[in-house]
Length: 542
Image 1 (cartoon, rainbow, N blue to C red):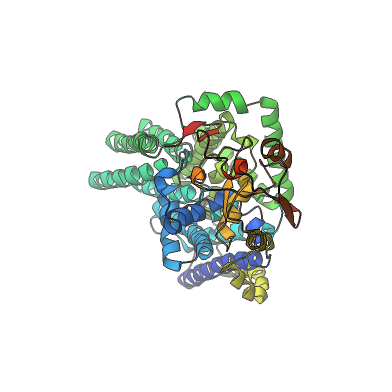
Image 2: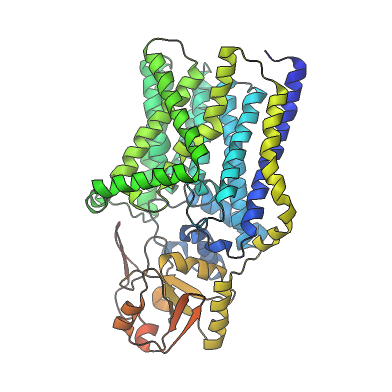
């Protein structure tokens, strides 16, 4: 039992929870900005530069959206819309990317609080503080690993085009659906169903992963609730119709209007090319072992939550009474686990680095909502009194790390207009040799194009020197190329076999750049049919 005075103190601790959360976000960026070449850390992989490159090409260089070839994840809503608005407002491509990530992290915390309010009605301050501390813990894990030269599984919650926005929308829509489950009027159920349909449609046409992370698991939950008579048949049908309708319409718009790469044979192509059981199991083991070694405490949190879920569901199957809020969260979590792991496994996506971004709900939901709700339930069942001083102790302990970073707060100025040494070197040689257009591998093209202050164009090409895959730069055939960055798909041997010996070369640290002045290299995309060929299919340009 919590008295009035204690409740008032817990409200104060809830406000302190917000303070700690914002301090942890600030600490992350302070630590990030202390590395002068932070744009080349694994945090900012080539995919992250998709939106800055798209904005620069369309808004600043006069390109057209319809010249770009999109994939099954177009990231229109909300990623592209929000980034374009932020870039237009700040007039700073770098600042817009940082602002986007801050907004997304705050939205994650707010979505979790919204879901809690949907579950509880009036959410206890202990739960709300627990949610904020959970989100703070995520940021502290990220801050601890930000300067490590390896990809961290939690990076997507900070970034556009890495399914992080889909996770935020998933949690919001989970809260909306929970509200429809309660004994509300039919008009409210219709309203919630319409909102679910509209937001889910926009999300699906932007990111197909939302189907396996939310739509299918929620279909399972709604079906189970309807069959067990815990949800009226009419309400169940409305929600099922909204979910399935959004799925069909979102996929249809994506395929018909935005030239998506997903063909009817995509599933079979991926199965045939990528799914090899030995490689798959090795990659799963490597991913899990690296995670356990890097973040053993975080791993323990996830495993213990999974085991707690098994115990709750087992107890329910044995007809032992269970809190419906806890039961629902675990059923949804296990539905996401089964559907998400099955889909990612069958499509062979565990073969790639950074494949954890496809499993984001499984990694984040237990921390930002699952454990706070579960621990509160345990406190109620065990009749354990919540001591405000205990909450204050946890809050203060979590504040220590962010406070330790505040002494370096001046380094944040590096985020405003970064200029890594590698890019500066390339720009200097571009002035010396009068260079304008170049080619590079996937992980090099966008950062150099995005960060160059000499307006260099650096296009991504495949190993056979065709324009790069999905969301690659358009209009290669209208440019005259004069340099190539040796890296990734662009090997020096292949260049010499196709274009002969380079006319000059220079180094930026250990990165070699070769210069060609012959017409074969200069007009390499003008004298042949231009198309893109990826593992998803072949795409012709108009």
